[in-house]
Image (cartoon, rainbow, N blue to C red; front, side, top):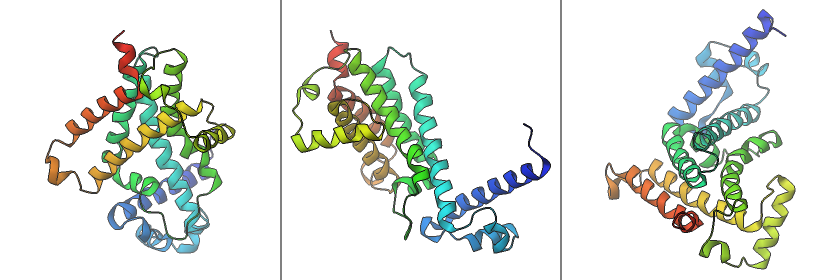
Length: 235
């Protein structure tokens, strides 16, 4: 059904509010996010803006969903640009896409992976969006494992019983793979997240000058080996 003129105007106003909010986050940080300041910049009254977003936390939730969806689409697009049977290429592409998204959208990265917004509790509406990116990585490793394309020390390691039990619990939350697959995905996620954060917060610059991406690419290759893709490639 086609949108009415009023619906189109409402949607356009919501988009403008979100765009102004992202600008505010980029210029002043997440902590400074203010509905009144957004309304003032847009030439609206605060009560008028509240008709679109009842509270700051409601706006934060929508921004978080927006950021996670942007992040996940980037990972999925990079993964799916590779042939389905080329598990190694899909893994590499997804890891590199994580880093590239972070440096392309630092304000969005800061909102979902940086300092928590004071007083904000993650809304359940954001749950599926928050899981989506990790599931993309878990899927790459899980499909490779199911196809017999992962081998080596990583897969033969024994998980501590309490950790394995926790990974089993995660299956109830839509993470269907074996505990070891989940562990490998979380391990890779931790490494690429750490590198992205170090870059964004300026810790790489003193060591690497303009060679940060070369460093990340080398580390992605090491992660690919560590997960076990290379052992299979050599056979």
